[in-house]
Image 1: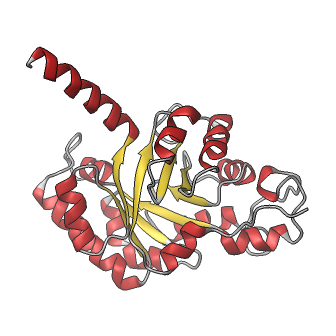
Image 2 (image 1 turned 180 degrees about the horizontal axis):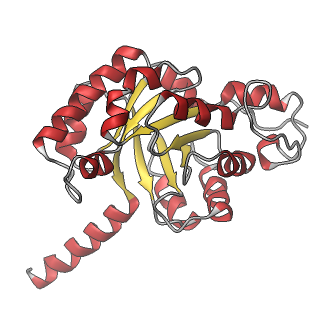
Length: 257
């Protein structure tokens, strides 16, 4: 009997420098994520940092997305080896690690995803990730196919882009405009001209390192702006935004508000 390959299509497409359009999934629902998985996005971000999703809930979302060609990317709640290990064991292969500010923090994130001697990930061979122990050579395959992106969302992280990108095992640097704005004195704002200019510059700097520049850009004007500047992993919307704005718009069309 043969089992599905561990080949990470998302990682391969990043290495081939393709532009990948994604959708943020923050509802924490396996049923809702299956609805959007059929839309054809290149990737879907399963959020466990700013959502009600816990480990078992993320498992259900991974299972729901598995029936579709969309690649799942899991944002872990924090750059923590124990938390990362558990998400990897349930089958996550592509991670977004929040709030990485230095090369040392980036190295710690990568180490959490690799088995010894290259990392500190605990080894369990009977998990969903290894097809419950049925995949021969799983540990080596898992390390090879792992994809790690880190979030750049503070002024310090901006200063350290080149050093973070130089860390072996980092596949992409993903800019978080909301926290970056907050860290620069603009909480609740995502379009301050000075901060947007820094994001523009950061995308170009990331591209020059050879790593994939990513960004969350639910406003079309800014998504297109950053795509033109070289962003390649772009979240162009979020399930919560689609649901809330769509339901608001529908009601307003009848009430005339």
